[in-house]
Image (cartoon, rainbow, N blue to C red):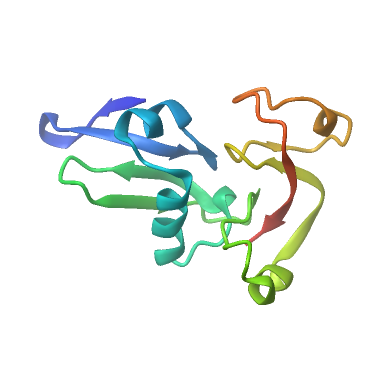
Length: 127
């Protein structure tokens, strides 16, 4: 998704309301792990905390956070069990492992993600 920025420059929206914008990421050749790494650099451990993540025209990132607690996909490395176990679970809430879309329905967890058609769901966490 492209958006017009201040002074007519173009920026790309990589995350919108806690959900990866996969088409934009593909166009900009950004991987999920690159976006997650930048979020972790900004002290974010849960994709649901991200209101917007922009890839600026100069190649830099700007991340805007929600003020309130939001459930989302954990973006901690899978091998870091110590920190993962410290995350607060969001009971009855699941996040698509591909795009981060959050659902509150265990039945829907059996189906593909309505946004990206991903089939893997993870328990959502709060931050």
